[in-house]
Length: 367
Image 1: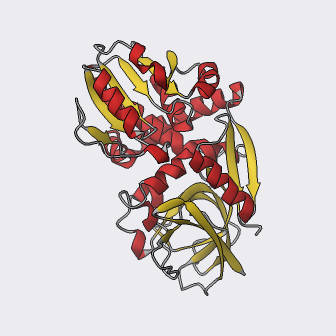
Image 2: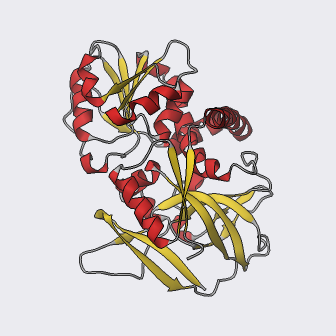
């Protein structure tokens, strides 16, 4: 049996290669899972763009491939897998899992802290990494799991968790004294999920910034109070107390926002959807651009509320969002099967040449 991997050059994200390598025998306590299918979204481009700074390359390191001047990595993704080989008595072959996978056909994991609901990967190299990314949930016991919606779960569930925590972080901080929240890359799934949550907050205006071609899509979502093209930014009242939530990572746009709003109360950096325009956030007028790290807010709330209450509130939010997505048909699912299709889908996502109404599911397990 071979494992097929989609590798990305760390210092040139547009360069990819497919590698097939033989599977090594499992060590005691390990399992091998087939990665049945995974979601490919702008969130994964953010993982790649911030791969070194935020250690996303560290989840599935590429240690046995060296090229002169090139360093290769595997972008982690969310999706579903099935255990096909087990040297762990507590995890049987055939068990279906939701979790954080490599862009690959298979993954070797080391189950630890096994419970009825799931387990964590106990591999030594993952111990310093955020625990939320190391969890693998048994679909048979996962309260978030519903049969028949696996694609939407893979595409939207991890993004929604981030969005829900952004909304909670803003409320937790009194929206930093602002009543207007400005979101870039408004057509991205993480942005409009955030807007969906914020729209339920009384007295909060949610303005979406997007490209002209995506304005109609953003407007029909019904999550935004207003949707503007990027070049219409100067038409907004710069004296209004405002929070900027940046999903684009566009350095020029960030500079324009900071320069326009004299009452910018907080600048929240979330994503890097505009990879070609990424840049530093130094020497900007107004507040310092601060990276939002969802696990930190999640850990804070779990400690304050208790894990059970935290989990239930997140579940309630997810159920409301999923119902809206299905009722209004916000996402059409496209399938990319095999290495060539996976490479093409990644290249399109990296270049930003994707339909915001389409969600791409990828499978390398049949390769």
